[in-house]
Image (tube, rainbow, N blue to C red; front, top):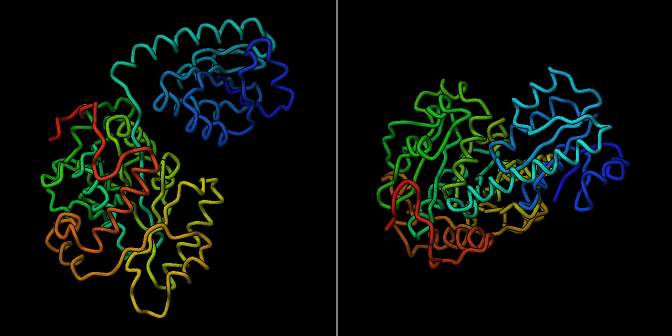
Length: 391
């Protein structure tokens, strides 16, 4: 299947001779990115002559990391040395004159042959990619990090290869919540930008011994956050999902550029609120923001934490305010702050407690089953981790 990115409504008919019938025409970068994310059958993206070169190069650079087997071909009204060099540096395979349909057909054929070789080469070591699950709240103090660490701990402890990434780059608490003393952090990924691989990813990981959860911690120095570009975070998450079943992303309570980048490539968003007016208002604003950004509604999982608190606000009031159903109600329990203070996740510390059961429901029903996995760690893993064998 091919994608033709062109704002001209007649473009598909114009290039049909060269591209064939199995071609979908799209007129925006966002639509192209969404189809590429959802449809692994796409083999080529042909970019029309009127698409700005900078936008075309951005797509090619992203595809080079995310879909290296994807062929990107650029059409231009005039092919000059500057355009050619920029296009090739960004990862495009060929640049073709827009009016030379025979040359375009030849370029697509050559690209298809290369794609088949790449797919054949990577097929032995590959397998399905994992899923990125971003946990977010626009208000602090709602239990977001506690939820992230416990989801990650439960998934890892029950057999899934799981990585937890602390994306609160200035004030992340994942390390202290799990009593980890990391040697390295996400800041060390900056030096590997553009060539991060499995070995580099492994070097950033600290493992939680009791559960087998792998963690990439936030920098210990808040000043390091400013030195971590957005593209480094995007590359880190894309590489991570190639080697883990689930990548859980804990976030700060705001839509930073890093958070937006994580949301853009996430398979699901866990949105957390509590029974207080500011939290509900901020959740409504967050949902409106996601709508504006084109985030799919079906990817959202709303969690109401401390849902049984007697504070004059009820869960049904929250549903009415946010106009979105609540997937899981997590009750209050004094065992939660006690477990946080000891650095032991509640799903390990009080496995039969009501909070643990709610987090297990969230993990099994709304994450595992959503992506076709069996619950309670029952699935049999044929692929071992690239980093270690898990028992």
